[in-house]
Length: 161
Image (cartoon, rainbow, N blue to C red; front, side, top):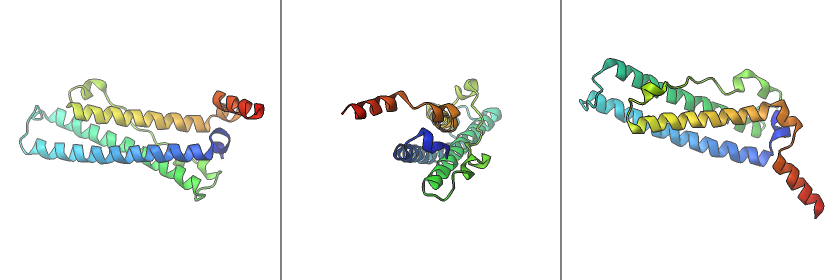
């Protein structure tokens, strides 16, 4: 698989496990926040939520956060399946195992939301971008051809002693 040439399997496992834990914790926080927010908004806790457009925009953002996180989790689970040998190297090239597209957030609209909502939106976008960069690094032909500078230095040190 393309990973074998670009990442150490132990490092890959630790990266995937760390990102998975982060995504699951964030998914739980998002669920708790958006569920509570919808309940409190409907219970009369106005806070500017009487504007139907703002309520719809907030609901759309909660769906975007959830979608982003589910794409991340699905990608990480496919990486775990590959690690365990449940998906072979050739299958990992299939588009269905790629990170799905997730819509971005309109910064102007997000600025009107409470701080906690903006923090969740920003954190989910940041996590998505990190996972996308990891996927790009793993699938890049350049990554397979050129070893990292750190790896070159480690090899030089190991041959010197």
